[in-house]
Length: 167
Image (cartoon, rainbow, N blue to C red):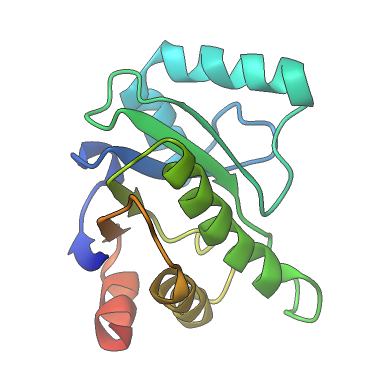
């Protein structure tokens, strides 16, 4: 499995799937979540509403998927990262679970390429360096069967340099 790093806009990625740093409601929001919902169009929101009807949203640390709507990616894997409190709770384990659950879902969908944003490092306040370490370690340790490419897509310079140094 190849790991790549780019600085850019995840909504423009040409991977089989992109990961959305969603909120529990799955109804869109700010940051990456809002950008994906805007770029992907109304189909993603409709599919998220159907998921909510079936299971009531998405718990922190778990993942669900929709089609890519108007995006280049065929699928959007929505995962809910933890809100950083002080690091003494389950935040680290929940963030690791976001990456694991997204990869497992990608495998079920027979996805060959997947792009991840920097989950929980925006308004959720997870320390960027620690989040980058968790993301990279979790992906490097993952034993993929169908996934050939994992791309970390950093929107900002700070995350890009943190990932670059760790990779």
